[in-house]
Length: 314
Length: 102
Image (cartoon, rainbow over the protein chains, first blue to last red):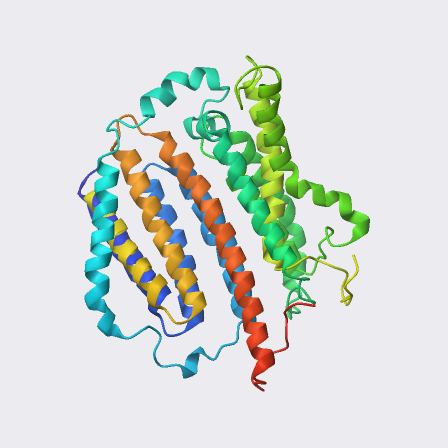
């Protein structure tokens, strides 16, 4: 890393601090949300600098993209009486408490991080990579060595979707009426590209940065774009009810893969010898589809229903 | 790497302070997101310092990003419902049409 790299890192760090400050302290909420989205995109650059391209992809697609869409659509629905309020934060006298307390917590965390076993697990991961069925270490960790984490993570995502849907029905209409005729046409043109990129990322995951999470996020973003372009979600009514099973497909497949090992007398999530590669690809497809649909489900902010139907029955 | 470690520290403090003292709930949520990013940054810097590059923290951060977006989505859904409830209580002529529960 030369001098240019150091200068770049410094500028990036300064920009990130400034954007984080704007995101939490800007007087205008819209300003704050947009600062946060830009913060997420610049964080993706920082991840690349830290040699974590998988996280960069996920941050750009999920962190900045999906979270940004959620924040902006929620902002649209929140009462904006913020302008009349002059005191945004609790009184500043609390700084005398916050700076020492925050620094102490940070110091304790850093100390805890420092006390971890020094070389990490990099050697172990590389040594077992040949038996994992994939060539990319992060995918091997996510879907083979620590598949339980992925199972629980999709469980959390499903739980979030269930929580949001149980809060009530999705607002009707789902999105504000678009004045521009260009968006529907553009959305229809672009959706196949979203599907193609998602399939490519999914396939790439076995040997390079990519995999189910960025792929699912890209596909989910495509679905949100179609929704904004005026398409109606087809998971809304009882006649398309079976499609809703895709929401839990990822969790079900991962759980089945985990339990199958136990049934065959092996450890939980121990794949039969020689089948790890195809099995991981299958799990990634299922997880990718589920993640795409779950992110879309989160965006709906309620259980989707027929437009204009506000009854209480199923 | 010192740059990124200090960045993680500064972001942590900004996020922590915002999360506990902001009066607006959406602002709190943004601060929480900044806070999680700071923790992820600490993890990834540690993975980068290890020799060879450690893939396990990367996988954990990927998991963390998805959990963060789930938390944010649930919190936002609750926020929108709270705002709708408050709008019902004091009729504000400037408020838009209600988009809450059916």
